Length: 220
Image 1: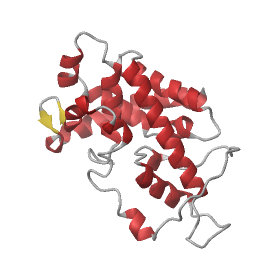
Image 2: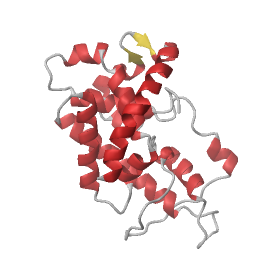
Image 3: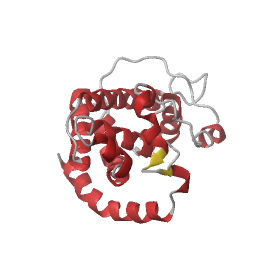
């Protein structure tokens, strides 16, 4: 995971959407968005949290509510129409990708055997632009769902090389709100590719606090 693989941009978008109704929203976006976005990023990429938000056996409406709650709790914002829309899109995209990962055939001619879950997750993440799904390590409880056709995975060497800088720049939650897209290319007034040691230090500090949130979410 890097600043260019989509997870940070998604977390930032969610945080900014939760600030839309604040009178100081523009100042917050320019000056204070990085730290809460990283805190949210650390939480959302924990395998247990990611699975709880996108597992097919769970209610999608409850998953949307759970995602909104995490965003508001971490970012100090509020439930806004923009946040509701983005959260619903994120859950829908990742649930579709989870289905693809679980049902993906091992090869084009396979009718019974499925591709290994780890490979299916990597390929489904790429196909659906589901940037958080790569952090899921298990499929969760079996769900009764209507089956649909899923294309087989390509060779492992192809799957492993697909996540490159910019691969998720046209993810649905990015393209549905172009007025805020400039905020994802900078942190304050600093271009993303110039952020270095400070990121690593804050990310390390975020790990400990996020574990407490993870425990609450996983135990809920």
